[in-house]
Length: 103
Image (cartoon, helix red, strand yellow):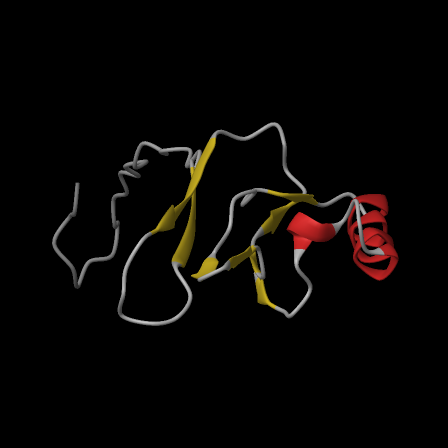
């Protein structure tokens, strides 16, 4: 995630922005936020970024439109594939003369 003053909406018009995006993509990351995250009349910019390098997972990303700050909120929700392990019950028996048998 980043809040950088590199406007990804200008990657076709601005060589440094295009170079930045090329470097990010060459390292295996893709932006998941692709719409403006800061809108001030008369401009709109995409300067709040979230990247992922896991394109095989299911995820949902988006922009939270609010007037609390001058930037909109961004989010990424990924599906966590937790493996649920069944608890293993181990039965033991004590043969000590001082202890009661435990089963």
